[in-house]
Length: 433
Image 1 (cartoon, rainbow, N blue to C red):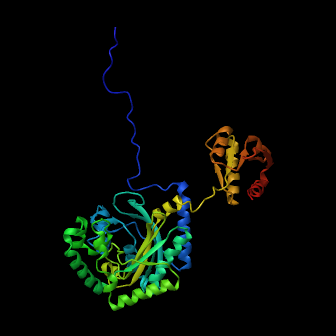
Image 2: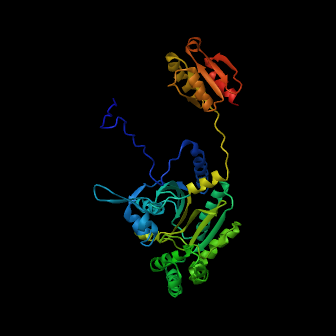
Image 3: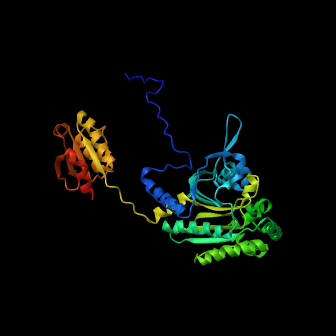
């Protein structure tokens, strides 16, 4: 007789959902930290040399700060900001950049009463809702330098030279800095009229994106990489030919400062910045075998009027940390030696209790100790020490507790010896030399 199969619910337990990090937002694991530490360390060292103080602004700001400062026609404002609505009805934005936040802090804390110009640096995460791709994330990190309160073209040059020095110290190959000017309100408006006239006659020959840019932000026409638009861009009016006398003098002074420092800049009349608050000088530095854009910035004198009570001149820039680290890793620019590991093994409860005190003595003396005290067997702990490539292993068992000794084992040779517990710090340091 055939057995009748029982019908009903399956006995299989449903699989638990395994959470992943949100798309475009990556973990920075311990094994990746040396590259981040290297970049941040060099940046902080330069900040000290150039007399920049550190500032940290909130990740969340009132959305109006960015809506006023970034401009209605920018992609950041149109579709890339993460907006959070609070229970009280406030609209907060996860910062897409820090320049507006730094200027907000400058006014809020009356920083104009201190030493001028006000020079600050910062680093941390930014957020933009864009399509994740190589070198672009929805949560990304920037290292920023800002100088607020002075119009002198010397500071435009200093910001450019600072980022150049930063990237040189990181050994980034193939550095290509490009410099341009966007003029002031007066000469820029004159230039935009000429640009609209030129492209208006060619509206049927440019791509759909450029037709849209022509209406809302003509300067973005120079960002286009479409084949049909490139020849038209090359023949377009040049901003350098339309500068007023003041802007022309300012830009010439910036270039003279760069040349005095033998800075190998490339003038690029078609270089543009996507944010409305830029004025006069701006720059972009490309690097690596792919010529990736890794640092950019410029003067932003008008930002202060957009979010504050008065005009305060300022200049600054930002470095894309993920992009730089990717170049450093792909080009093998820094080889980090694994730290020498000392592994502490205990056998038995009494040894575990006394071993904690011994480990603290070693750490207090500056000796880095690894352990896995949850494992009871000697074999399991030795396996863990071998896996992490420990140079020395300290073995502390019940017998050693009673005799006030400890075993030192060299993992490379397998040789080991007993020493007095009172000499453990001295002996370990001697063997690490």
